[in-house]
Image (cartoon, rainbow over all chains, first blue to last red; front, side, top):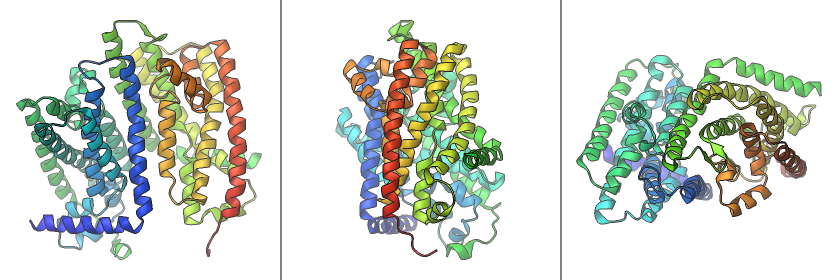
Length: 260
Length: 261
């Protein structure tokens, strides 16, 4: 409860900071929506030529984009440091968070807000609505899918970036991991062979963010529910455990005077 | 002229200092090709045909390899210029005895040479594994010639976006939109041959296909007539954009204000 109040206070502060530069914030939001729409044009052209691929049509791709974009947007807007944690660790900027009596990981992640994330959220929800799966139980399944997607996005990248505690600067590795999980999450896993599907469900959990939740929203199955909820829980526990283990190894050149 | 060659060479040397970082970045091309192999392999299997709109599966993969190489190797001039404008560093560069735009041209060239080289090396390896041997030597030749014009067109657009920082604070959004226009109308994600006729017509009137589609398409299906057609349209756009860039630069200089220093 205490952590939730803390999170809400942080989000309020982030919003106030964004509102200082209202037009820049709005520009980011609008341009991100246009960006996503332009990217989706590929699928419009693709399905104009081929009606469907392995049971996936334009509507299903809208749904998949809706889930993945909303999950990414929520993660980026509310926990913006999840893509730059490696830099924070490698540059010794964790000192600032360590000096405060709050959960360190949560504080780092939520202390930055990417305005473009709001554009992804609006686009994602819009895409979900247009996809035609807007029924009461469809909305519930969509909300659950977004929630697990957020957990997996953040946890996976936290795990990769926490390697900075042991390996030093892993910014390049984090960028590759980010690119892989984001790109693979926007394609249906039916396109890939069994080995790749296995990788996308475990090591690079992109299928758990995109295609499995999309299948789950299309039609409820216990198997897909179990996959996304177990995936989210396992990655979350792993992320917290690895980050805490890394924190015990953390060393810096006392950058605290710079941050404060 | 020699000073610009030095700038390009220095940038190549700077990048060689971090080979691991470069190899890491090139892995992205492998990821993209792997995804496209899944998508197009499945599509060709479902359609049950050897070629779609004249392109085979192997053509598609090598086309995408070349397109990704160009995209991942294009100069990031816009980010550098806009950063220099925002932090005031531009004042120091304008003082130096070289042309601002030619400085960035050389800098971007040095940066891109290694990126493109690395992307081709990794891309060829992955595409060969996924789709068989590469296209003929004629295809390589036509692609290399049109790559020069494509790179200059990219540079002009990136520099124009960067110069926008003289007028507006943030230019990242412009880059995103430009990138998507190249993705779609430039034929990066889907060759123009797959577009509906009306959209092909519109795309060909714009500069984007000459930044991406021309080298990639000529690479996989070299055609002498198409080559001259593409090359002339490409250089017409180069001339137009260089002119626009020169005018934009002159105007930007006039609105520059540097405080303190």
